[in-house]
Length: 326
Ligand code: DP6
Image 1 (cartoon, rainbow, N blue to C red):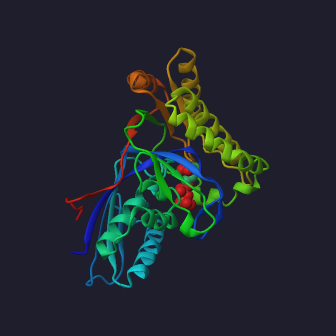
Image 2: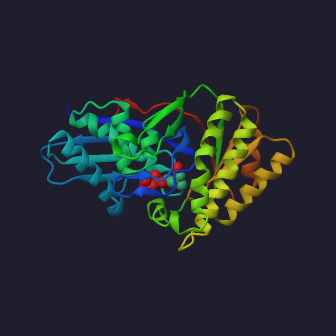
Image 3: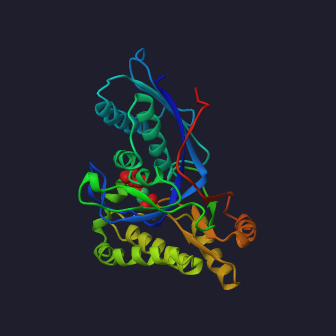
């Protein structure tokens, strides 16, 4: 049967991917490190069917024009690799709000890449899947892996893929995501990458990034949560300083985002282990340890601009499911 269903988790970048040296192939300017987030998942079913006269793409119950175009482009890559020109039906569901800076394109294109290659009969290993997923969305090349993941920038397409550097049970970190808005973010990451080098601080970032990646790898190895949290929070602020100083500038934060950032720093002054990081959206990932998870969760929910929280742990690799979405 030419049908496959895969569940993949989103991730949160500890070191951000920002800027591309090749926009078509999605080769990043710098390497990145992330952790996969079980609890922020996408489930996608793909069926290739000779009877279809065009591709059908349904995301969160809706056929969305813009998003569908990007999905169809990815299906085209897969059809070329398989040498089979058959249309597909794609149905995809997220367990979390998409387009709000929670990396739904990462889990989405990871689930799509694995289910579509399976459904069309291609047997790809993890490296091949990562290279292919990357061309759909950069973060997706990390989301085909599990645990703590590193994406090496690479000079060519064949060199630019991700690998697990630590399994999901190496460290127990909790990510309490403070949702401050469920609407779509104003600027897409894809558009933002293109303006990264207009910030005068971008060259400084690239000069220091290899060092920073090395430090993050080291503190993870040592399981030093406080050092890791401090590095991750300052990386997030550096990344946002690039967004703020790009042309046109990108102010991703909402009032609720700032409320959460200040609350996290206040919690730390009381001895609560909590550190924030934010992607291009307004929702905030708050990293903490199992001991502090319920306290952090309680306090975030008490904030006036927080709608709800979603809690995630470090997750594993994508998995194939028997229960299809259609
Ligand atoms: C800020 O992967 O969404 O979340 O490759 O154009 O799809 P495209 O961009 P995308 O960029 C994500 C950027 C980020 C940082 C990160 O997750 O590393």
